[in-house]
Length: 357
Image (cartoon, rainbow, N blue to C red):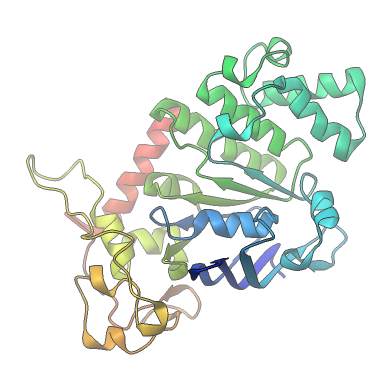
């Protein structure tokens, strides 16, 4: 059994006098221990809402959550995260589940010193108090690469740089050695050098502790350098799921193909225009009427409007190894200039070079 198994997760936002909004429409994926799984897509595809639903952080009013999210606890049993009460979720968050939020400045309390925010977690879940808690908090800050950690414990979030604030969030998330870590765009708004350092730090945490990592991002460079398996989301559904290398080598869904094809390439001729996906995430149709990506798709056919396509095995692939939700998948066509294998390798090597800088 997987550490986390999400089955047909749905999240619908409701409001009086307004139509319902289906932010997540039947998302399914799994995460094993020590595995890094990516959720990829444009802003508005449902990535962050998925993570908030798993953590039980969505508001109780105006939201309907369905499906199952079975999490294997330390005792060996399993529990559905979507049905747990507030108290039970608080007990899980920290020692078994943890999340790194997208914006560290708004996620940290601006009027409370960093040390108090870190030691609060140690007191709640590990029963540590006083000097023992402060020493452990300093050790955690040092472990994530924050210089002079004892002094930083007395400082407020606005006194730290963006990279330090993100590292402080990571220190808080790993304080109790969780079995599953959810990282929601952990490198957003950071410069390239700091991004590479944060990704290298997350790699070390996964390798050292065997922590499972659910990486939520729209940055395909992050995916290439970090993830084992990738789930591409569009309009609240997984449209393609595969291992990192098969996905970069031969993306089958036109959306995934377009994402990879729009990446600037170092081996492209000078002056060659970029090849973006036309339209925006708002140019969709309801999944019940067909493929939501059809209005933006270069491979559109009338069959795309005959109801929502199922997530099925890609022709020629091993069962369950490469899944695609498309009636007219892209086959044997490289995503952009050059060979598709090189496209994935170039993106991965760029990330590796940054991490070693």
